[in-house]
Image (tube, rainbow, N blue to C red; front, side, top):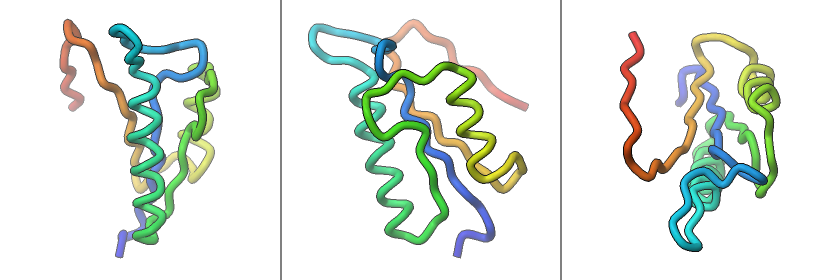
Amino acid sequence: MNNGYRIVVDAGHGGSDPGAVSGNLREKDFTLKAANYMYNRFKELGVPVAITRDSDTTLSRTERLNTMRNTFGNDSKVLVLSNHINAGGGACQKFD
């Protein structure tokens, strides 16, 4: 039982935005693979779930945010899981 929670899985980057790159490894490929796995697993478990992109497409920030907000509404029972695999040098941010 999911207690009314709904999940939006976000595959970070995509299309013309590769994210971090090292040789032929691109962050956008790994985030898409992880997001598709998560999306399919949540579906198998019967959890209401959506995904921001399921292929290598470019999403503007507005398109990504609209998908996150509009799929299930904008309330506290909607969880967004945004996948990123940073190359280092980034800072962790705590949200209060």
